[in-house]
Length: 206
Image (tube, rainbow, N blue to C red; front, side, top):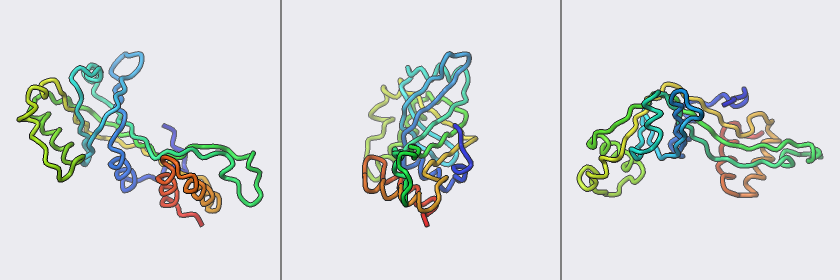
């Protein structure tokens, strides 16, 4: 993805909490000599530099991984449409504004390893459940779902590169950014509060 200078100052202290808060992304496996890559929507768990997830063994992504194990896990969220007139302040012509969309996007690039052993798959499930349902008692999948584990495959992705972009008005001065933040909060639609918080946190409007 294209990352302009205004959106490049995204460090791990910012992108990691964002990825953890989303917890859902698109696994992209290009395979080899394919017309298009395989793209799989999936829940995932990020622990350190490793991503854990599980899928049904018949998922076409496993064919692509057998051809080439390099993958991208794309995570995007907290998006909000910003109408063109929202950037107009102090008598500026609202018809001359440029609309945009605020959003956060992180791409985790790495090498995938497929896990087929039922006990190891159960281990991945335990770790995902512990993160998704902290403090909730669940039956051990290795005991109660043994036959189902035989058709499930786990995937471990060793992350080697992170591409992060937070497009939340980094190209605006303080007054214009404050105007957009106020209008996001006033509209209060899906994603608006999150986008406003990102914009204000990254560079509080003056």
